[in-house]
Length: 218
Image (tube, rainbow, N blue to C red; front, top):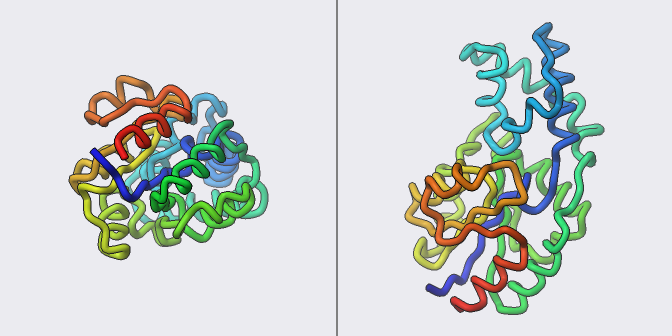
């Protein structure tokens, strides 16, 4: 099973954004006059689209209220939270090795591409990637199924030669919808059980597992 293109999730896969995301959610909830959970109780919010998380946290599906919460979140995130982030150890070597194998790499994140690009550039990963794909600020294409479909069309990719790598079920579900193979990673925010339920071709315990698997398949 050889792959020519690898799609990487960002949060929890390439970087650990825990502080920036949870603190910005807390800030938004405070502005909304809602209960503010401890940071550890917001770990589940890392990965899914932001509107989905606020729908649960605020117990409302009213788009106007969700948009307000997202706007408050961005007040803090775009200034401070964006860089409260750390690069996952071993990721630069993975990216360099896959590029040396002439694989095409793209970022595929539910985060708006306007922010994702800044993070990828901040950690000096941009030279490894063809393009950083993310959602629009409106939330359009924040679902991984829609985003992966967009990337396949935009890049003219064959689904059978593409693999999606991510740490949450949303990444793998999006891949499955598009008949794209997936790899789940355990250093992010999804459990092994969550990932196994979506039948990935590999669950990686460490970044080096990705290289070993993909290079053996090449």
